[in-house]
Length: 522
Figure 1 (cartoon, rainbow, N blue to C red):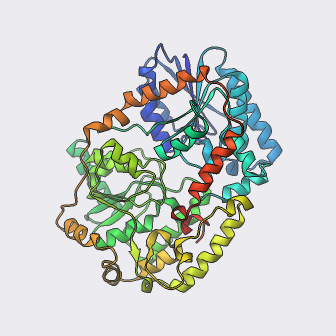
Figure 2 (figure 1 turned 120 degrees about the horizontal axis):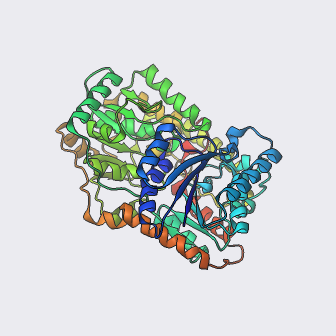
Figure 3 (figure 1 turned 90 degrees about the horizontal axis):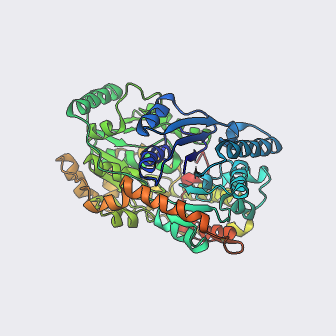
């Protein structure tokens, strides 16, 4: 192969960009023959410093960025549906003409998020018709608590789930659908036999930053928070699914002296209300919370590994993750991790060999700490509105959320509360909420003692992880999938739609329903 084309809506700082920057150099080194050119195609130009990083990591390979605005998020293009469709088709045609003739492979990221179906459909059709092999790499899914996207999809001519499935999960001989966890990959493999796979994100025990850099990061953090105090780090963007207030609650209970510091900002306009609400609450209530320390230009600021090294502990309280890179980054940095045990991620982490001492399923909250009945009414309204965004067939599959299934006030998981109720809990004095909730979460008492004594445990880096997550292992698995594509034939009738239906039946079960994700304001 002479040309590898990496396609994403954008190359903003994110988990997807991190996967690309870690994996691409290994693909260049390991590919049989030679990759002469690496093309980065997106809806906006990447940061000059990041492009320079990619060029430096792929010596001997030409690295260049190409930009078509039509590739970006549809919500940010502000185009009519016919105009968006024409521009997407033109961008796909120009991309195909640019990379042909000659051997090439398209590696397209996060099309399953559904943020620009005109582009997704145009790219899939163009690759199919031109015989260009494609790895469709799905990091997130539009149907995972993102049903407001479906309203936008309908407005752009994708009238039902079947039309969306045909675009996102196109069934063609030269297209391989790949997931980043085994649970999702098992569904894809069932419906696209021989043309689906699992690629866990690449990671490794990188060299830890020099002590001088870690000390500098500690001083920088002290300047950010205005005092020299312990820092508990939440390495995430300001997204609702990151469930950031649960991290704050844990920090207040277990290490009252600590500041919770998050790294990124909001990555889209739909997440802006949540980010603004957190910032306003922190300022008004005087919380020990510093948001988005790396959200602006990171030049001159500590790196993420340096922030890990300068922090006392790491938190990951997400409601959902495709892979859960912070689990692994905490182990690589040798930092204690406090994290929710996500059912789709935990089996993969165990298979890799990781053992995380401080993981939990839920933090249960005494109902006296928030207005339980008002919260139930609020959730009933929001859930009805959320289901109203779905087609009837999908709405019938939705389970009953935890709080709505309870007839009387009873303990509720913090993760299953709206933002309004979460704020009510945090408005309670920390000692009062601790006294009411520690009996419901007895494991927290031991963690509190360990945190005070500096004895929270970190996960060791297992020797077995390299065979799963190492750069060479990743490249070989990727190459094996890519090389098999030219020999694959078409799939089963209606495979795209059946695969999506399987996902819907699974992802709409009660355990996957979170009020924070039903509305951008809850």
